[in-house]
Amino acid sequence: MLYRSLPRFILAPARRGQCQTLVKVSECFETVSTRQWSSTSSQPPSHLDCGKKHVVVGMSGGVDSSVAALLLKRQGYKVTGVYMQNWDSSDEEGGAVCPMDSEYADVQKVCDHLGIEAKRVNLVQSYWNQVFAPCLENYAEGLTPNPDILCNREIKFKAFTEYAKTIGADYVATGHYAALRPVQENGGLNLFAAKDRLKDQSYFLSSVNGRAFANVLFPLGDMLKTDVRRLAAHEGLCTATKKDSVGICFIGKRNFADFIHQYVPRQDGYFHTVEGVRMQPHQGFTAYTVGQGARVQGMSAKWFVVGKHKRDHSVTIVEGTRHPALFSDTLFASAAQFNWMAGQLPPELCENGRLRCFYRVRYRQDLDECTVSLVSSHEARASASKLHDWQSDQLVLQDERGEGSYLRVDFDNPQRGVTPEQALVLYRGDGLCYGGGPIATAAQTYYEQHKAVDDNVRDWCRQG
Image (cartoon, rainbow, N blue to C red; front, side):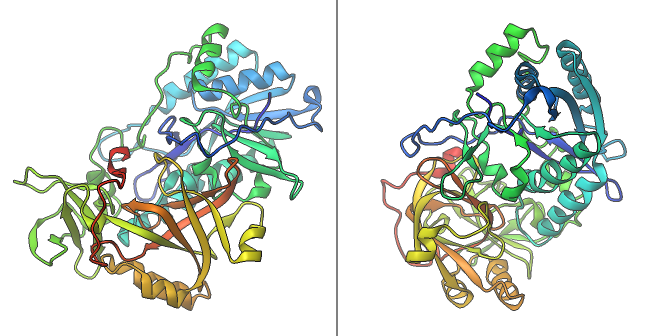
């Protein structure tokens, strides 16, 4: 079966004035509960005459994209393997950390083995302008952007597909674990989660315009990772036993704060408790994410970030994984910034004003159920958590820009560490991805509502 799937690449930064590389962040995949999704089989696109079609495969030097190219070659397509260079670390402090040359060497070996052409395209400038620079702006504001999602939207399904057209491609393919299937309601191709629920990468594709998938193939959508490796080994591909890359390539083994402060000036401040007690200095305002652990010198207990305050660059922290300030029942996301992949609101939301569906707010998270509704910016501001200054301020700015309508997402179960600017992604029960968009704010936390966290509430921290 031929599905449409795309490899996951993560942002690879570069030094100021340079650009960066798209790096395969291979298998930091999310764990998904199996109870929600019914298996839906899909057929290869009936309109394709494989022998006459040219497919350009985005190849990273890993096993997934290697097998994607293999499957397409077996289908009878004319296949070209292209390695994307999206980051230039040659002049970066700390030296080069992205093994681009060795990755491309593996791409060449695989292409030679398959008897297909190998190419290399430099998309460094596009990546810098469309992915890394916007991320830097968000980091400076105290937010935590998701470069993987930006990279898929701006590079893999825009800049790369435009390049592929210049070399005569009819289709673009990648090694991501996701599927494209026709749906009767709209007659078009829709994004679905992959068969391998542990490797599904639809979360990272949720902000891509649905029309961009018209000429995309995801060969791994109906395969398990174990089968991908088994097929690669049987074929004798040099990448069969290659380890999956994890983390952000351009950072390598370096400390995130040390890396990001090469681009965003360090904003010093102090840790504060939710009660307002000032503690010791932190490592820089941009280095912290809501929900993440915070190392507090001299403290043996675990502390976690629950808020950031740009006015004085303070970071609010709490002790313990189950502190009420970490949990909330609701979030808000700008309706104008949410990407409905079908190009319109789901009929249920239009007709009933409410949508029952599944959601995910981080990539390593089981799906859970929620209710989605549309509300005004006034309601969102009134309900927003006050632990994070930026959130309420940004809601006002969005309202002034005419982005005044918000998705209100009420969770069936409390959610831990809802992070502004990370993605909210919504799913139908059969695995169809409705779309995704950046989180604007969590609603008031349990701490702000003087509510206790029940013992049966799941500790999402274990997945982070």
